[in-house]
Every structure is written in C-alpha cells, then in structure tokens.
Image 1 (cartoon, rainbow, N blue to C red):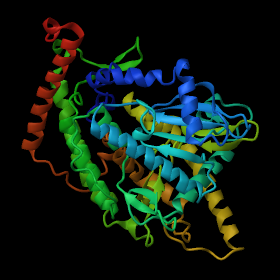
Image 2 (image 1 turned 45 degrees about the horizontal axis):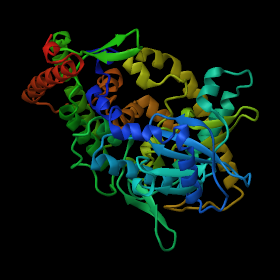
Image 3 (image 1 turned 90 degrees about the vertical axis):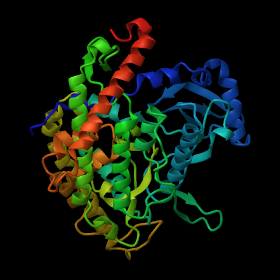
Image 4 (image 1 turned 60 degrees about the horizontal axis):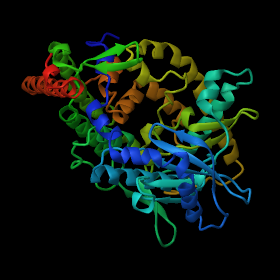
Length: 505
C-alpha cells in the first residue's frame, strides 16, 4: 500500500529528558536497592507478615525477575507448600497522580485475577494479598503476593522451535482461553470489584488502559482532566474518549515530532541531541502526517462502530479484555506441552466485545509494533496469514468441542458472572471478519497511541469511506507549534548533554 511517509519516522520515542529525571532520582535508587541481597531479610519479613506467619518464615529463592513494568521476587517456606511471588512495579514520575495510577492499576489487576480465576479454567495464579503503596515497604509501591507458577516462558519456547513443538495444540489451548473470556459478559466498560456483602462482582471503576498509564508515565505533564472518572456505558463513548486522548497527545508530547535515526552501535532509534542536527522540514512533514492520521482515526469510529453494534449482543455487552494476552506472559511445561500459567493481567478491563473478536496479532512471532517501527510492515503482511488460518482452525475446534458439550446439559444464560448462549456468527467467523475488514487495525490503533499514526498510514488511510474533518488552518497551526516544540526540546537535550554553549550547534 502506498504511504505518504515511512512508518519508521512515525515511531514513538519516550522522552529521554523525563526518563533521565526518573532513573537518576533518589527514589529510583532506593527502589533498586530493595531487591539487593542485603535487603533479603527485609523482604522475607514483609512476605512472612503478609501471610500472618501461617506458613512459617519466608525465604527468598533465586534472582530478581525483571519485566518491562514490574519486578518479581520468589519465596519458599519451611512447610514445603507452594512458593509465592511478590510483584511490584517499577517507579515512574514522582508525582501524586503517577503514584495514584500505580495503586489503581495494581489493585485492578489483583481483582481481575481473582474474578477470572473463579470463572474460567485459565491457569491464573492465586492472589493471596495485594495492597497499595501505603501498605507496602518504603519505596516499594503497590504490590501483589501471588502463587508462583512453574514453567518455561512460552515465547522463548516457541522461538526455540523444539522438535517436540506442537503448534496447533498450543493454538488450541490459547483459543480456549479466548473463547472463555469472550463468553463472560459485563454491563459496563471499566474495572471490577467485589461487593463487601454478598460477594457480587460488578464493574464499578473506570477503565485504566496500558495506553493511558504509559502515556502519562512518559509525559507527566499530560492532563488527565478529560479521563473517565467512572465506568463507561457504550463502545462509542469509549472510542470517542480514545480519540480525544490521542489528539491531546499531539500537543503534550514534546519530542513527538523529532525525527528518529537508527544507531547501529546501540541498535536503537535516537533523536537529534542538538539543534543543528534537527531537520525542521522533516519535523513539519511528520507533524502534518500525525495530525491527519489522528483526525482520520476519529472519522473511522463511525465506520467501524456505527451504532454500538456489539453493545446489542445481549444485556451485558462487554467482555474482559487483556491487551497483553500472549506468549510472553504465558508459561509452558515442555514435557507435556501444556500451558501452565498466564501470569500478567495488568490493564485488563471490561471492554467492547469487538476487541475480543480480533485475532491475536502475535501468532507469527513477528509483532506489528516492531514492523512499523522498522518500516518493514510488509514482512508482517507476508508471514502472518498462514498462522492466522491455523489459529482460526483452532478456534473452530474449540467451538465444536463446546457445542458438543452443550448437548449434554441445559445451556446457561448468565450475566455478570458467566457464559451466555452462543452467538452467530461464531467467534472464529468474527475474527476472520475483523481481519478482512481491517477492523483489527482500527482496534490496534485504539489500544496504542504510540502506533496510531504508523498503522493509519500502513493499513487504514486507504479504507476510510468518510471525509476526514480537518480545517487547513488547524493543521498549519499544529505544524508551526510542532516545529517550535521540537526546537525547544532539542535545545534542552543539548544543554543537558553538552552545556549551554553546544545547545544550538
């Protein structure tokens, strides 16, 4: 597909100035020391206390297991019972809003794990205790103490291509997980909690997505005033919020339009670090492309979500959705080929059912994000379809198994806590439709503000049936602002790197 600009130039690079402030802070240094060997006793005492000493004294086992957003520390007990995992997040900006968001996302995840573990056969760790930053150790932040799940990382296993690999069997297991999630229905968009009396679970909190959290952590001056304060009641309301959020980032992310180049030494994308290296024409070109892409996304809301189609599936039209439900967050037993754990449920929300009708985009182990960032999206288009066909066949197998099982029992039609009757078209058919219509790319753009411009150029720009509302003077105003913003940012980078004398050349 012809594009007006290489998607590599539209990649998102976190604000190095802000990251330097975080990683060089005293708070970050204190957080890093928490997992140092000299603090093993402190962590062991903390975990022992969380369980009220019922299993004896906890003993730390093994190294610190780092993730992209959290770290995990493992503990065992003298009673030889199951080991436990203490997980807590990496710190971000030292602001009250940032701290509150970390608390919110951690509590949300723990509740979703409890909710889904009780309602599905997905191997989700048991949550023993969770708490906010105020309930944890100094500098730890919020935490979850959960069951330690044994197994090998599924992504690493798939990449290794062992002789015993049975990909169709793995796809069938994952398809079963997605089928179960798709058949849980909730009546609002947001996060769940359990009532103090009666134990009824319902959606009571706002949706807090990976995109909201990540964009704020990278840009702590971003206003959250327009974010939802409670659950949303329709898919259109959610997508219009996303559209406003993405448009606000045009003005808030100060290095958004600084062109990138590839650094072979570090194998990373880097931006100009002094003003003389900044191509202002490229800045303006990138800015105009981003502006049109985000207006284009807004126009596509009506095309892909014309009348809350999926909201009419049943009385409870929303489903639990986890953006990161893929092999990097799954464990497998190499001997049996069984998936033994699904271990990361951050940013799960009750979301429009159409998200659950998208095929997983990781199937070929070539991620669209990486392809967009390297301007190699054609590679994804080439390699993904055969894997998609194998996965859809797996979903169909699961559907047939579930249909057969239903013939021996009375079908149950439950809301809030359980399955609903099978819809038509089926989940496998909806996934195929999503791929063929490119709705999966619209949803991808909704989930990733850092990729919306690239995927719009690569897949969505040519399919819009409606006019993109954009007055030329608005685009001109933004292009001018982007150049001024980029110059100011690069000057500050140069000042920090080289001193005042080198900031402009």
